[in-house]
Length: 175
Image 1 (tube, one colour):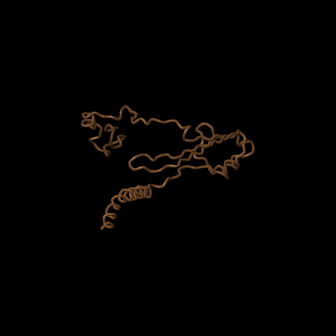
Image 2: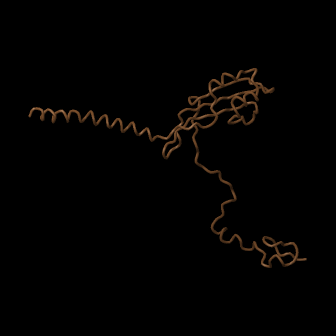
Image 3: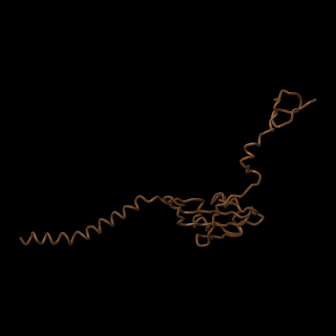
């Protein structure tokens, strides 16, 4: 009889740790369904970046080693910008930016590399997106303008009635 009562006392003590282990396994399985991270842009490896030597490397060398730049500076053709982001999709929101890298390569007028600058996520500045539209005057017609706007715009005689009217929009042409 004593063996049966020891088993009944042992099971409740074992139940709480067993439930904790099962809960941890279930929570760990949730990460299995997490979306994989995505690399966007043109990431330059650190080993390739070491091969770029200011003063000797040319634009054609950079194109061969790294590829074409993500962006060129708007008013300076001698600044090449390589942008890359490691993102993870999130449900119903913008992707989460896990890692962000920007490499600025500047060249002199002869096409030789003169400087390398690296930026990361900590160097970025927040940007506020404004949800407004730019008004363009003259495109909004009132109700009465829409209702009566076409009165008198069309030629009632048609396009076959004599000279230069030419169908719609003109006055009847006479000779």
